[in-house]
Length: 119
Image 1 (cartoon, one colour):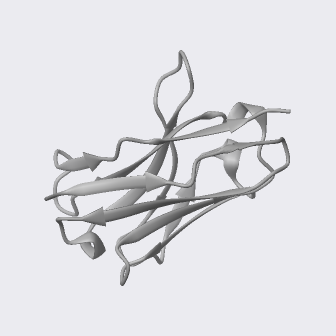
Image 2 (image 1 turned 30 degrees about the vertical axis):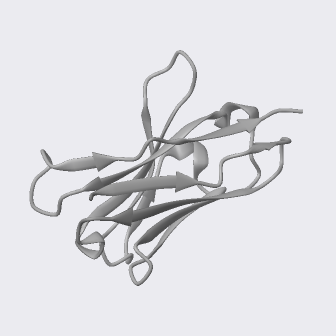
Image 3 (image 1 turned 45 degrees about the vertical axis):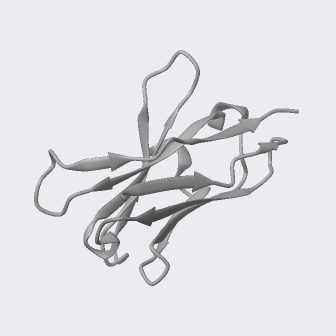
């Protein structure tokens, strides 16, 4: 059964840190590009960071560069998002997405994990 299960969301104060995890099963994880997206209340879902299948390449949206780090462990079928120096505007539901290596029409979503940054 194909699954993407996010975890690690929590409520933290500004300046705090969190590490999100996304555990994958049911497909060849090491072949897929993995991404983290987020959706804040009343806003559209946006791409936060992506990492190549082997983990050698990554990219980030400008607002998180220098604060967030995406990584993956293909032996554990897991992708991570380390989030430091969190800001209230980082508050959102965070989703992971798996993108098929040969077709942009084939992708899978997790159900999300909530991150709240508030004092």
